[in-house]
Amino acid sequence: MTYRMRRPTVWLSVLIAAAAVAAPAASAAGKKHDRRGGKVTHAWPHRKGAKPPANPLAKWLASQVGPVRTRRAGKRHRLVATAAQSGTTGTTSVTFGSSFGSSLLLVRSFDIPKSDSDYDRLANLSWTYDNALAALGFMEYGQRTQAEQLLDQLQALQIADTGALGFAYDVATGATASQPRANAMAWVGIAAVAYRSKYGNSRYDKLISGVAKYLLALRRSDGLLLGGPDVQWVSTQHNILAAEFFRAAGIEFGTKKINNGEITGTTLTNQYDVTANAIVGKLLVQAGSQAYFVQGLNDARIPLDVQSLGSVFLSNRRDARATQVLSWLQSNLYMPPRVVGGVTWSGYKPFAGSTSPSLVWSEGTVQADWAFHRLNVSNPAADAAVLGILGTTNGGATGPAGADRAVSDRLWGEFPSWPTSAAGSWMLILGGGGDILFA
Image 1 (cartoon, rainbow, N blue to C red):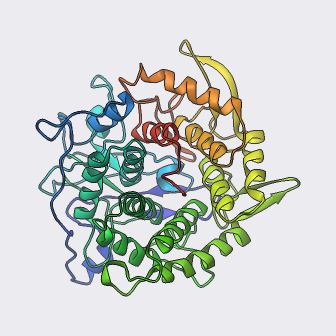
Image 2 (cartoon, helix red, strand yellow):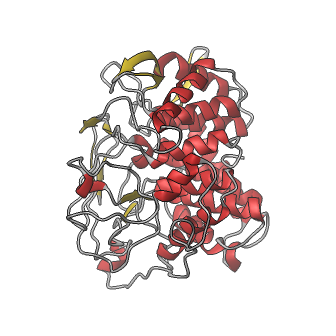
């Protein structure tokens, strides 16, 4: 899995070998790395007699779990990741090889029409980030068993000795990304800690311990984390998410050892302080009365999702610049109403700049509205944009359309217009109050 980053122009190439089980570096040294394994809870529709979620959107999201039949299962997948999946700017080519041997109860990232030419290629693709986000959305709406199904599967997939999880999976074949990324790891850790905090249950302490071990191994001397074990670039999104995992887990465990291991809650609290200070010192830019986060070290691009997550990150630190970031977001990323295909769209584009894609990104728009609500900043335009996107779900029968138009760009990433699980999960998080995340 190779990434070329740290420059404004970026090409990400991800090669996912199904025969590898997640930490190829050690594999090359002749050491075997095994998935943790374990029982995976089944929820509707995979559990006989179980009732579907009452909320239509939650029901749709639950129906996205598990594989669908395609004509060419297990063939080559190529996709250009959005900023939310990669935490970097650029494209991602995803290749799955032969089957790992079993299907997975993970959420399919896209709800692609069978008539679409990309159906066979991408219907069973599952970004790890999307599963953590779906688990958070289910918990926000009280769907504990649905969340457990996803977290159980992730814990079973985790590499026991390193704590690693793949960047993405093929739910039909069990194939996995050969290299993890810090942001996907952090999202899983955040979801597992949220489960522990909400339900007072240590069910995922092994998962949390593995995530902590993996992320701590990515530290640089300045407190920031690398994007992965095989790269030298530093992403702001990755670091904000890792910092939030450190903060939340530190609070949850206090002075206790995590899963009876060497890492304690205090260890993570101390690392949060170091990483958070480095983020503010190196990745936050003051622009007059406003402020914004850049994409990463030596990458001056300005992504939407990093502003949303970053504003809440700053708010948790009681940093007055939190609202300055939201002010910058509204001033520079808002797309006023326009009609596309007979539907009125408004919201936020994924990146700043005149050359960035001029589209309304559903996932990022709902996430931005979540940030405004978390900071108690009134924004009728953001609320109206979310209601418009909700209108693309046909009353919850489908997920929210991913964007007002599809864009696939080598430089900026891919933004499909199919219904996406991530946009649906953010809708559930926002609709449920939003306090399951960055609490």
